Length: 180
Image (tube, rainbow, N blue to C red; front, side, top):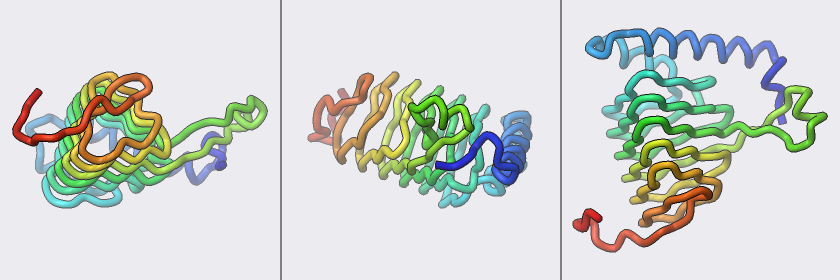
């Protein structure tokens, strides 16, 4: 548990992050020479080519790690109170959120501004459909497709298609050449 609402250092770190996100989101899409350095100054680690369509928002930035060949469409939200790590070849559709932060069920502690954060890990070769929300502490395996609108509350194993609220494994990915 930590004090996200009243800790002056955390507030200052979030303000810095939001200012960079604001600048990024208000830079013309064609100005890649300006946009990519802004993200590199914000994110904890980047590896190879990556792109995030604006608007993009996060809380701290330095807790986010991107693998090679990362792409996220519009309206990506990453609440990175803890580490959020994406593997190589991750593609994220519009309107997705990765939320490491959560709040106590107990109203007294919640009203004190306390919250917790658990890391999120996304493996290699993952496609996240539109409107997916990933909650604290989740690990998504390698070669996974998460269907649109899913709410991922528990770990997802390798080589599966998973969908729903809560997100559940629908089927294994048996043949990489089948596109159904």
